[in-house]
Length: 557
Image (cartoon, rainbow, N blue to C red; front, side, top):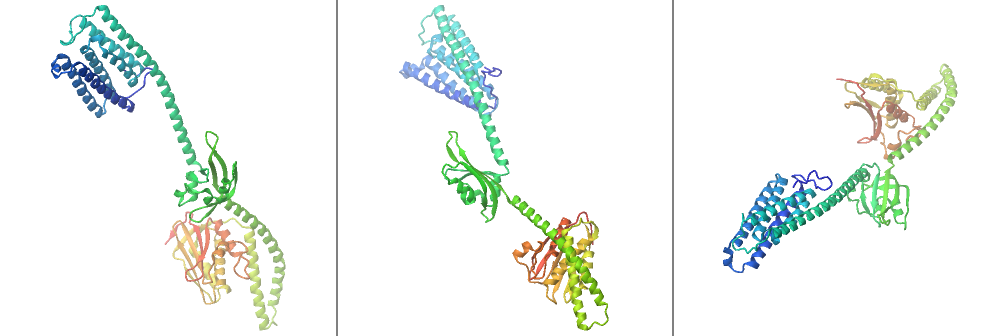
């Protein structure tokens, strides 16, 4: 009764197969139900008095019922162990055939009406083990019936004492045996063919289930792996599903997005869904996040159709345009800076030539000995303004024609200290105290000359906004993999709007400022892969912080 190896007909099972275990339970229940109902009915119909139960036939039948229950309990305990279930099923079927043989013996031999149980068990064998097992059970059943007919006809086994079994000729027994065997063969053949067909159908269904399961997993993985947002909506525009990329764009609070109207998150896309017989569309809009942020998005809306071709809702694909918008702004800024740079170079050259003549004439004037005090005061003013114009032209040329940083090891703490000392002696630091906290030596890879220019411009900018008698604080800190230089003034501070634009070229908060110095500082710092920021200072004023990478530098305590 082994169904394995029957290609196309056998149902492959294993000891741990859930299907075999379930079928095993159904066979046990069927056996107990049949033996109880059939034998109880036979006894009720044939034995109307309790005295008759003392006869051999009732006692034999009671023994069969008791044996059936005992074996069923034993089968159940074995099944609970969960070991060798297939072997248990084979033993069960073998003992069942013996049980049906005993029942046939007690009810008339091969002429018994209970021989149909052999046909039923042929069908069950095909269901439990496969088509080939049906022929095994049919053969075993035929052998039991042949043995029963032979021993009873030969008188080796006589009928029970209270059984009235008419004498049968060898021909009659052969006929009854032939009918039973023919029935067993026909049932085994039919059930085997049906089992083979069911098996092929089952394998096809299993393959289809696996294919559908694989497609479902692939579909889920594809949706989950998309880097753009994907949402589906119902006919009324409410969000039904959204993939992880879309939820990530929404940010905190995205868990409550399902069921919300789409126009609450993307108003522009939501308007398309309100159009009757909407075919689809695309455009640009904003994604309104729960935290109040507005994320620029590009969206595409299409109809969601069911298998019957009817509209079930809509599909919305959307992507974050934040980086694109930033790149566009950076490109526009670069174009604007390029145009300003060309203008700066032209203006610088146009100014430098007459400025050279003015400077030469000024030198001739300062050499005269007949100048009075008032004239010399005017010359001092001219000298300062000429110097300011020369520095302005130099800054404009440096900004318009940036040079590649020539990086070498330098002590940034000592460099800042030198610039501070030189600045203290300049006219721009007049009546202002510059306090420095540089700590120990800190070496970095940098272009020392351009870094000095940054520090000088920051000090000069701080002095311009700090009133006479005020303080300017300068500090240099070792921050691990980076170095921070801070210049703090005591000026009027900085507004959020100015903070966003303070490093733009030609933007200045001072009436006579041209906005070149800080823009040049930003270009030099970014050329060193650093960062420069400005923020309000606690207690009034502004803090400008320059952050530079260490780049394999070493700290000397």
